[in-house]
Structure formats: C-alpha cells, structure tokens
Image 1 (spheres, rainbow, N blue to C red):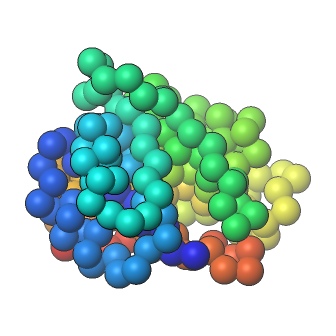
Image 2: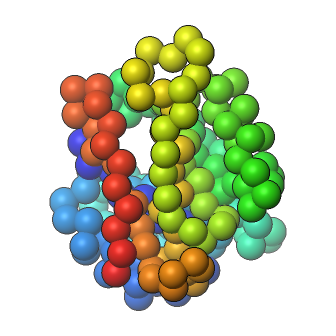
Length: 165
C-alpha cells in the first residue's frame, strides 16, 4: 500500500496537485492540516480515500484535531502538531503517540520535511516509532523547496520517504 502525505497547503493547490501527480498510484492520501478545506477539494478530484486534520490556520473550520487509522496492520496517528508545540520540541507529540500505541506519527506545522525512528520500550516494530513531517507543498521553509511524503507499507514493513518538487 502506498500512502501520500501532504501538509500546509494554505489554499495554494497547484503544487498540491503536482505533488499528488508525482506520487504515482497511491491508495490513500493524508493531509496533516493547515487548510482542512483544501483536503476536501483535493478529495473531490482524486479517486482514493483522503483523511485530514485541522491545523492552526483552520480556526473557523470544523474538523478533527487528530486521527488514528489502522492501515495494513500499522497504527497511524495524524495531527497538525501545533497543539504539541512541535516548533520547540516533539516530546509532547512523541508522548501522545506512545499513549495511542501508534507505529507512525504524521504531522506538519513546521513546514520543514523530515522523518526518523525512535526506540520505544515495548514496541513490536524493531525500528521503533516513526515520526514523519512531509513539509509544505505551498510555503516551504528550510531549503525553500516544496515537499511531500510517502509511506509504503508492505508485509508489516513501513518505508517512509520525502520528495521534493
């Protein structure tokens, strides 16, 4: 299964659609917040399920602040990250993921792409907890390149990737 990851579209959908096209044939799309309504627009134009959460720029939009999905035996925790102060530290986000027994945390807010594994006592996955931020497809920070992510889940193995436009 191939999952596409977007975050921080901020109403600028041209690059989001380019990213989706670059992903190739995906089975699921996740939008990690900031412009929840963008996810609804995207969902209307793609033929895969779309899951989204609200971000700090969605104050007048109703939607979930976090979601937990089970996909191919992996527990995915999705949140924007602003409520966990991820620009300062990911410790609170990490703690929430452990509480939810997640295998993967998908978040946004920082507009900076990246991923990593961290060991957690009692986890069955030898790699530990995967934390991934796809960056922003509209307003990138860091090196200034728009980015998105993918997760490939096959036979219980989760392969993350960051891609640049």
